[in-house]
Length: 334
Ligand SMILES: [Zn+2]
Image (cartoon, rainbow, N blue to C red):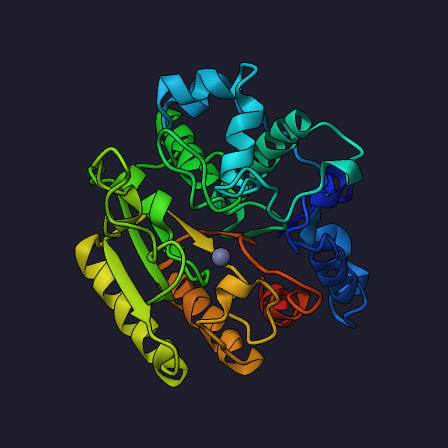
């Protein structure tokens, strides 16, 4: 199934934020699937077009610190958004942000982010019912327990898993994160949780791993807390990427032999044509990305583990190609 609510389409530019997340990636991917000879006529079978879930304060409190949740609900929200989206430079200037271009106040972004997180929860639910769902949003894997980072204010992945666990729908889960950046928030939030095993394959260098290991107050930086399985790929090692991923998936299964649900953080940003400067350390071709996605799909199908996939990172005008090629292959099989 595809979970895509066209009404959810929005651009960060409406808020004056100039990060190149193109809404066209969802729209363009969907258009390609609709014009596919097998899929087009069967759209009603594979497309769910409404986000019906809601994320509550209780959902956030299962994952985030009470003080942080309170700040998000107070006048300090704007400060937290500025930090999470890295809009403020140390000298007080704006970074990839121009409030003069904003049509909407920054604080209104929070409701939209919660809607996105609701999509991830719904995606998990649909995957449990049908075996496969791909949500055209979600994947805010950098959000930490008491602060947001890397364009991620709340960690929708852990929020969704904890809600499904609380409802008794699932017990154990895997998070398979193939975004270019380490799934550091997810790793830190689940480090002491034996029910959630995480795999992250990511750039060995660069953000978030280029930060100081301790902050100005001497507190350890949670970005360095390991995932269950970390697979750092150095620049120039692209040819080994899928070999390492295959081995890593076997190790994940050895660590936690069963999962009731897998969340796949399917970032398109390892693509060689990605336009965000901080993704330059990994340059996979379309063919390598297709192999990546097929590998994860087949790994889950062979084990009968439902897969809830989210778009995560993917920047610039070309990233839709990564999603479209995989879905045009996978969807006709369900
Ligand atoms: Zn990323």
